[in-house]
Length: 169
Length: 169
Image 1 (cartoon, each protein chain N blue to C red):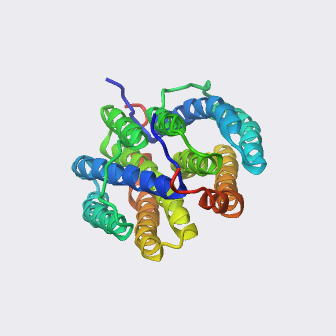
Image 2: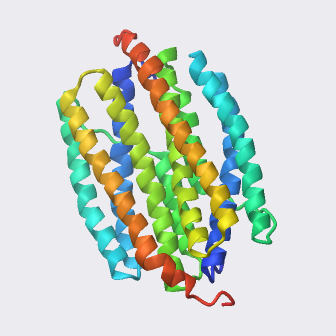
Image 3: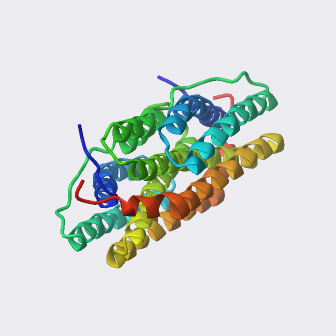
């Protein structure tokens, strides 16, 4: 049986879970960019992939700041979210509806990260690990900004186009 | 192959996914309340279970407003999130650390709902389904409030106690 004997051990668990989740996301974002139709969405996914690479590095710095080696611990939550997205994208959909579905799937992923980075940051803060707090906060801010950007792409470009699709298809 | 031919069909998919997710959460919240140690957290989970029952009813009203019967469509994202929570709770943990882990798991669930209700609400808004928008917004507000409440329980009660646990256990 696994033992998580302290807040420090829980913080390491949360960071290892996120380290695995970010790697899962890197693979998925490539497929999501390929599946997107409107250029704004394609660009947002491509840009967020670069951001995710930087977030992986930031987690490595956070492990280092704690005197630990980066570890991946399988993240079943992210696996489920990405499975759900893949399942949905198998459906036969007009382009604009697919874009709207993609945004819904991506925002579930962003929100997972917001929750998980928030938990890790709160633990690091309570322990006084300032460098770790700063690193996690930087990523947390980026996830929030990405989520907002996806909402505005949905409102400005995707949902109005999805509405134009004949519903009798 | 499944067909999602219109924004209307995507909205129904999103609502059916949430209808299934809420049912999964109802079962999980009972276990989470049982596993929690500090009374504030136990109470928050119990209270949120009642809220979740009302959210299920609200989704039923939203289906009805669209002239549809409530449908459950298996939600792999929520399944993954709850699996992750169960897996984590199998670990041997001091009570305060377990409470902190429970909050992390619960906030992942809340964030899933915030993302999914947000997507559904944006689609309903674009289609001018005002009654549906109001119903989804009401739940969205509750999820946001629950997430904030969990953060303050973590900050005020749980994380400081978790910090007192001897790290050499």
